[in-house]
Every structure is written in C-alpha cells, then in structure tokens.
Image (cartoon, rainbow, N blue to C red; front, side):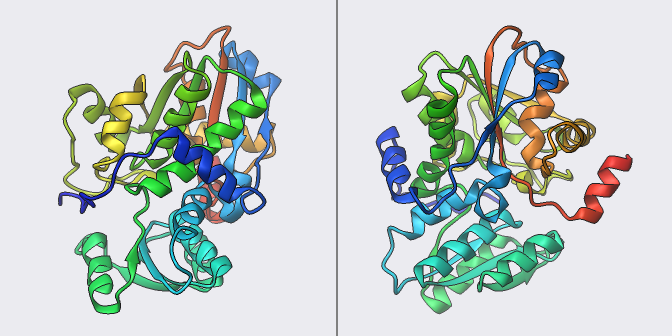
Length: 325
C-alpha cells in the first residue's frame, strides 16, 4: 500500500532542529556520548556513540514526539501507529503535556513496548499486520474521534526533533568525518543529516537499514521511491517499514551520502559487543549503524566517526535468544 502522506507539510530545516532543541531542553535527556577503545581498534577509527538507548522511553523517538506534541494545543487528542518506540514516545509526551493519546500497534509488537505504552497512559489499539494496514486503522480513529495524527517519521516536527540527537553529538564530540545512522522510515536520518550538514559540512552521512528491508537503499540509488510489498522480516522491529516518506525521501536524497544494508546476524553480533564490552543493552534496530562498521561495510580507517545508537527496548527473552544464536 502507498503510504498516506500529508501533502501540505513542508520540509524542515536546520533552524527547525535548533528550535526543537530549545523545546526539548530540560525535558529530553542529553544522552551521553560513549567511546570504546576495543571498538576503535576493531574498525581502525575513533568512534563516538550517541547513546539514545538511554533516552527517555529508551529511544530517540521521544525527541520527535515531544517536539511535535508541544506545538499542539493541550486540548488536542493525538493518535499514532507504531511498532513500539514511537508509540511509547507519543504516550509519554502526551502524558507530560496532559493530552489524550491513542497508539495503533501490531499484535506482534514486543511485550515490553506494549506494556510501556499502556504504562504511560495511552490507549492501545491492536491490529493484525498480515491482514490490516495500520494507516487505515489510525485514519478511522482520526475520522471518528477527531484526533490529530502524528506519524512515526513523515512529519516535519518529528524530523526536527530527531535531528537534535545529531546536533548534540557534534556539539559534544566535535566535528566528524562520518556519521552512521539507522534507517527505517527515514525520520532519524533526515533530521541527523540536516544537523550534520549544518554543523560539520564535510561529514559524510551514511544510512544503515536491515538487509531484509532495503527499500531506502534502493530508493536512494534509483532516485525513485521504492515501496516493499510486505512488512520486512527482520529482528530490527523498529525498521520494519515499507518505504521512506514524502518528506524523508527528498531529505535523504539531498543530504545523505551513502546507504548500506546489514544482515540480522550482524545485528546480533553488534548487540553482543555492546552488552559484553560496553555494558549497554541495545535493541536490534539500535545496532544497525554499529553493525555496519563491525562488518567492514564502510572504510572509516583513521576517521572520526559518529554512530547513532537509536534505542534499547528489547524483550530480555529475545535478547537471550539473540546472544545464543
């Protein structure tokens, strides 16, 4: 199904990211930038990890959600669709702002993410991803309840909020030669690329998505939006999107330098490294960028490299299975 886009939206700019940073100050965590001498030795570079797994709700998504909701009247009710992290972010942001929130989630979403959404006070609507389209389920609620739809990535205020992660990374680590960013629907990399090109113009921005869902990579190189026929089968549940959006696609084309894919097995290896050597719990989607470095997919020798670790929400039972694989 072709994604449902808002044709009235305009592309965000770096100024929108700077504004978002001011709204998020004191609300979102300024997450730490961590390093690992062992990782540096493995890839031959100086690597700086922006640990958004330590962000509120355990993922970068809180940045975009709060930025978007804070620009709405407090009386507004909002709805979104999400496999988990964006849903948690909308739920918490709405809770903090005193707003009603509804989150449309697949029945297969990780238990830890469903529980968190409900714990923040949002109403969860389940759907069967094999038979239903989440956009259609959400749109029915919009029409029936008069709610405002805040999609996971194809929204200017969401993109601007996500870009604050890269803004902070460069402010704290200094200018970078490369920045590697996980890619699902493209909201994170769009915002991060805008910030990187504004603050470190020579920085090459590289997107990494799961090999099973390579729509963004194919879109990037073909210059035409590619839409997958079905939800990709990957452990990176935060990147189980079928296409980039009408806002994120042009931003990716304009500001991203390269796109890569990485297999699920590489994600497991990266997650194991984070746990064993850096004592960090990182979800599969959050390990996308680091896995590409560990696999040697991009030559960063002698470079200063930023890596966005996008989230850490993973069911511990699943985590044990990944480590045993």
